[in-house]
Image (cartoon, rainbow, N blue to C red; front, side, top):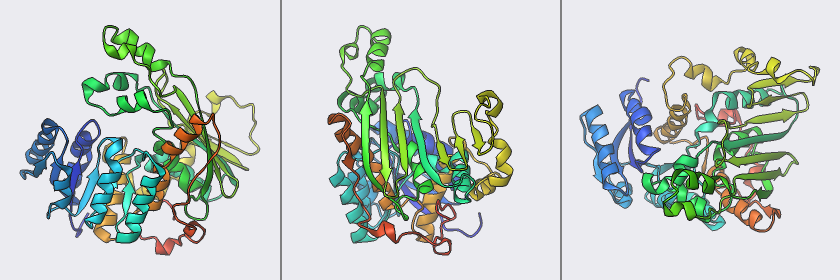
Length: 414
């Protein structure tokens, strides 16, 4: 990319997510002239130092290194902040960055109260500084193709979507105390849809959430919790973890209702044996896309066609319906979860460099972050419906953005 200004970023959090991103995405972005990592931080000094050494080895420039995240936000050589830390710390770090006048990108994870989500929105409205959730699955190849097909009317009128975070995390969670990973304490103490953004992020633009539509209510139900305990008994039988009663149910199902009557179903499934899936599905009056099996089924085709005959046929639609973002990405593919990390971080950096609204703005971020807290309430009340707040305070009715007003190369609404 020619004639673009490098954005100076501070990276907070260099654990299981942050350090790989530094090596696979941020440093290649530096090589492409898109950013410079001017500060790194982690609560653990060894992780902070490892991050600093990685930058210095690759670029010859040692960044400012600290274990105090406030110092990154206050640093004069940092213009944008990347928050890649434990879920519990996200809101405070984001708000502090925004109040310091520095745009912030936050890795996926949810708030622990609705009040915190409103604090985030109110900080944006007071400062004009956006917070973008760095939900990489919004830029998945099939998620974007499904979005493109929905916008072109290929599926007819879309009435329902579904998605899941379906990923066997038992080893990571049970050994969280050893790995210094925050998931373990969350699974011990909470029962909720704790990771909704991979599922919901790609669904929101399909349903035009916050852009002419919004979520109005939510119901969540949870199964019992058996998977982690049995895994701990088998793999760490003489450790106190084997006696732990985990609060988090093995399967959590969440149903969201929209203002226009459409629905979405989310599935959290991380503590039982299974094949990885995001389960992205779009259902319309003329056809559907299903991520499990990667197939498209259209009106007029036999409902008795076998899955084996359909599986993988979505690729045959790609030449015609590939999303423009992926058409461009194919010209110079760069790694990071098959490219989706590269795309979402480029979207954030572009918004900082060009001083434009990010494609996942603060209202979208708050909407994504509120789901865990709401699902926790619903589960505690036996699956009772709870209201989903309108963080836009009515602006969703008017926020049907015109493509010519949306300047982001990575827009999810064009």
